[in-house]
Amino acid sequence: MGELRLMKGNEAIAEAAIRAGCDGYFGYPITPQSEVLEYLMAEKPYETTGMVVLQAESEVAAINMLYGGAGTGKMVMTSSSSPGISLMQEGISYMAGTQLPALLVNIVRGGPGLGTIQPSQADYFQSVKGGGHGDYHIIVYAPASVQEMADFVKLGFDAAFKYRTPVMILSDGAIGQMMEKVYLDDPIPRRGDEEVITQCPWASTGRPMTREHNILTSLDLDPAGQERLNLRLQEKYREIEEKEVKFEMLDCEDAEYLLVAFGLSARICQKAMQLARDKGIKVGLFRPITLFPFPKKEIRKIGEKVKGMLVVEMNAGQMIEDVQLSVGCNIPIEHYGRFGGIIPTPDEVVRVLEEKIIGG
Image 1: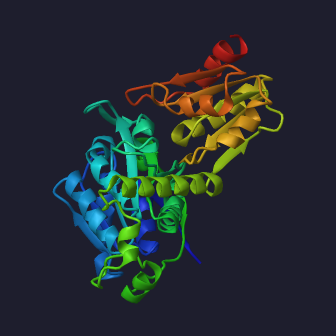
Image 2: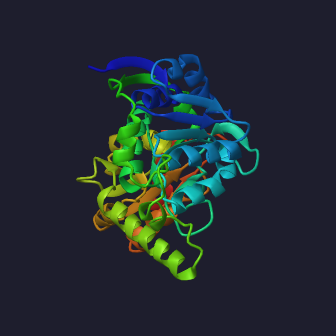
Image 3: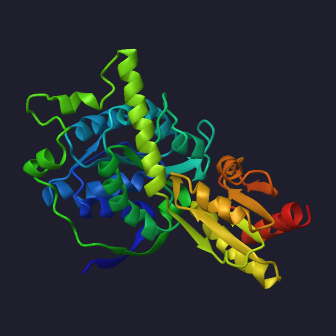
């Protein structure tokens, strides 16, 4: 029957992981996502479901523990915030190359460098473009509510195992810390060892190694073998782009202008859209839910109908590059962003829309 609770976004992620049958969490504290680890430690799921919860000595250690757990076919996850995710990039690249499923959570804070513990969306490049080395992608979900923080945990695990790839939930300090009502699904039992062996024939489970273990990994140092691996990866990414695109459109049917935003910025833009319509300006909102795969085809179709777009992000302009590449240059596409943890207001968004797009 599920359960309705009032929870922080970070707590919702942790509880959803327990209920999704997660086998192990490996992480390291960093503001503003420390509640994920704190909640798991307080709930002690290792006493009820058998889920391992371990505070590593660093983010580098955590991602390599995740690498090891994923290699055995277990449902494993980690969480961190921007500088911590930076430290994990080598491990994420290795997991993408060896095609291992895992769930990563990035509760973004300001930067560059130490920056601030306030919310930001400046990790778009690092997360969506693949911040590590090599030609790889990971699936990236951008929640805009505490409910989606919880929902995307099970969704993320399912996608990770379906495509054998790391999956990231890319959120920010505001959604991680805010409290909202969230509906939680009933718990799913963790898979037994025999289920893992059956469902994950590629996993290392103590059995003799087979061709299946090696053929889809990056262990082959021969150039031709590496090229075959990369071609297989690119084929998989094309399949993901074809089948896994998620987005939301609000009031786009009659829209003459379009706001484009993800995550927290999309919540701000929803109110801005209402304010603009109160002034007689027909504005719609397009919210990418998957940042990879980016909804290129869908936003291109809307671009053929509207007079201009304003991309709103809490950064200097990162997602706007994907918007511009998707739509082309037939209409004006401008950017508005704030930094340092300052969240744009709906009034600001309407003012910039009028100045840069409508009057520009």
